[in-house]
Image (cartoon, rainbow, N blue to C red; front, side, top):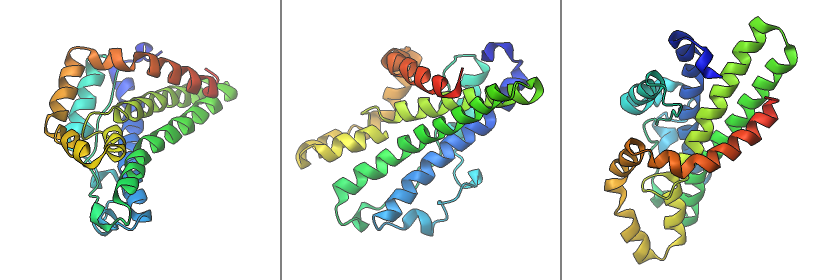
Length: 217
């Protein structure tokens, strides 16, 4: 569907969904941390939807742009991580698991919101109004599902690894968390070798089907 658009149109369609997906993901982490007693992100002004407070030049701008311009059909990115101080939690392991899950859950909720926007476009049947809503909805669904599923992978420091770490005994959690220094390299290798696409192919397919059905597409 996106193949029908020119490069400029693709950029216009994708820019807002990408920025919102990445920004809200980080705000969700900080908001959940605040619920458990850690106000670090709040005190540093990171609980805001102002994207300028969250932009990471590489993860928010350069990488998504490269993926978009090279027509990979797979776009993701990241923002500056919100600061979380687990020492402020009464139950650090449980709290960190829920703080980690807040990001992917926020992306799934946003995917649903974009699907409903696309559905409005489908129902209106007025081309100059419908098509922007549908294209934006498809982009919003795609980027949010990509962020949710990638972040649920058990590769430190992704959110899924925080859940796994919280379930492991202390010693094994410590050993497992030491992989964090290699996490970015692992992701780059998976991306370069299409390993990431192979791992996520079936989850992405069925998730897209579910949300596209919601959108009436």
